[in-house]
Figure 1 (cartoon, rainbow, N blue to C red):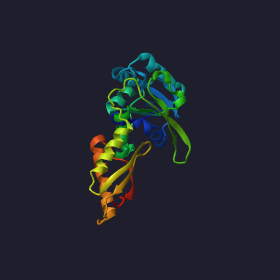
Figure 2 (cartoon, rainbow, N blue to C red):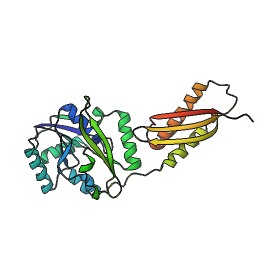
Figure 3 (cartoon, helix red, strand yellow):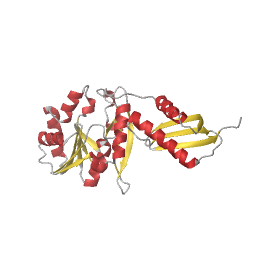
Figure 4 (cartoon, rainbow, N blue to C red):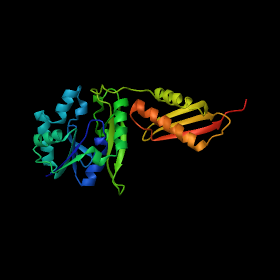
Length: 268
């Protein structure tokens, strides 16, 4: 069996990238957080995200429970898996999983930085820290929703470069997820408004919209002070940079886009 490892710190988006990366390697199976996933479908195992605390979640993820471990080993044999990608927080963890499941030695080690851009990793951390969201690389219909009291929602469909569907993701917020700080949209709006008001060229901030989706964006409508006797393009760019810097200082993430709608102040 060909065995590969993908590791990186929690919350860096490994599970989000797992299906596409496995397809790129021509790997048929994935081990992620206690689950065995074959060709994008969960076939065995119990997710560590079903656990009530971090300690039991880690134990579940590394297959210390004999019943759990043997069920996955049986499924590996039944599906005649010939290649597998093991996901973990470190090479030590993926090696431990390979040993527990008797998969043989890992042939190639990959870091999350090999498969995701620094911007994507930064965004994944931002979402984990501010919303406590985790991704499972299995379809929504396969998630045992009664385990989650707070959040279960459809993620995204994953396609190959040839536009063949190779799987889906599901977004969950596990019971053991306690370390995040949930921030309401109004907090972002207030920060962006305050930052814009500090700029010397701004007479009034009329409206601020904050969009948290595939792209994290701010849409800001401002009135400019008169007279406009300065290079407008450069000053607006400086305003965007100031907003970007302040947002990053507070949340550790750079906005994907800052859209400015500009009006001139009415003459008195």
